[in-house]
Image 1 (cartoon, rainbow, N blue to C red):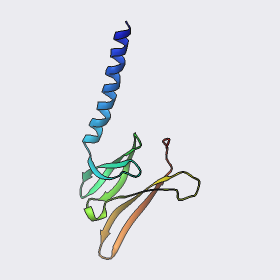
Image 2: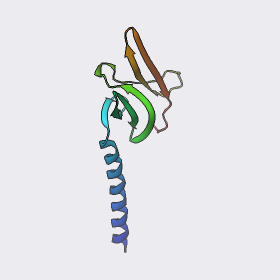
Image 3: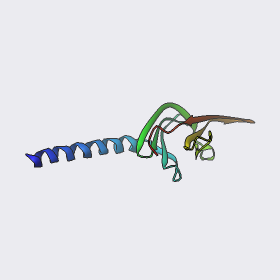
Length: 117
């Protein structure tokens, strides 16, 4: 009986890990930061990246309404610093929504870590 329960638990864990990995595989890897252990994934649609998935310290955060241009010159920037001097690093992602003749539109997204450091 113990072996059956162990087998069921093992299959459940493997199924959940495979499901998360499959979800990310459908997306393009946009950028990553080894310092912050962050990887950004997104879908490419009509010249912009949208529907972001952020893999941050083992967890997955979804941001479906974020957009960033697909130009490699304007890839998202990841900062992981203590900007408010509280002793904890904050995750900051800078997105470039669009560019043009003399115009550059960026969006700064600030997020306190929802995961334990």
